[in-house]
Image 1 (cartoon, rainbow, N blue to C red):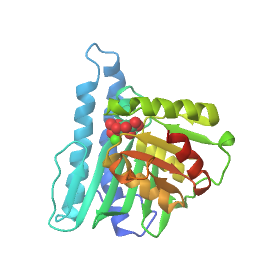
Image 2 (tube, rainbow, N blue to C red; image 1 turned 90 degrees about the vertical axis):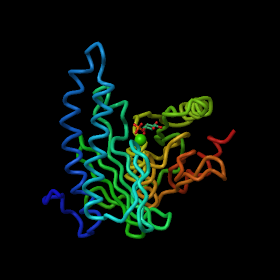
Image 3 (spheres, rainbow, N blue to C red; image 1 turned 120 degrees about the horizontal axis):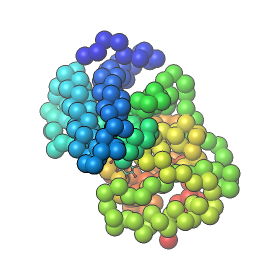
Length: 266
Ligand code: IPD
Ligand code: CA
């Protein structure tokens, strides 16, 4: 275990996560530097990026399971590892893979801890900008030691929303396109390519909101807690959608929540 994590909190679990992230993100950054060279090659950087993604996951797993050997792990690149207790880690070792693959410096590591089915710790780390977003249930959300609050804007016209085209399921594409059209017509719109960072940016008040269909639990587990702890609203587009499954996710402030849900439902 790396002995020099970024010390901006006394929380033991956040410091364990920070140490694991320090190690994994050093590898990611080194590999990101290689991507630009491979980008222009005939074969492209696809296999290389998959290897970088898996390497990041392996480091995170080794570091966390060394400290918490009885816990379970749900990680994007592996089959689920079942624990011997009621704790499960939900990890995306590289969120924003397409950005990474194309040499675009906007991607993240996302780590959440779930206890009895409820996330109580979440971290989203952007290795390029060195931004460490984190939250513990009931204790607030932070970027390093700065407290996060969602935006207080309540008018769509002056707001900025993010949405993305579905990453893995084309069945959601028509709905996503309809949401894009409505957002473009009614508010400021961005598509940054990292679900985890979109959620962190809502928590930080940089975006008024974010909507996406067809995500996976590891894309959103940490970010949803960070938004909630920053005073935000999280839900699904349809009443029955549970955002933590990733089926659909709406993250915004309370003031805009009904407007944005109505916009996304049709
Ligand atoms: C993807 C990114 C992307 C989102 C996709 C995700 P990945 O995760 O978060 O922004 O639109 O739905 O699958 O594949 O880069 O880990
Ligand atoms: Ca992801």
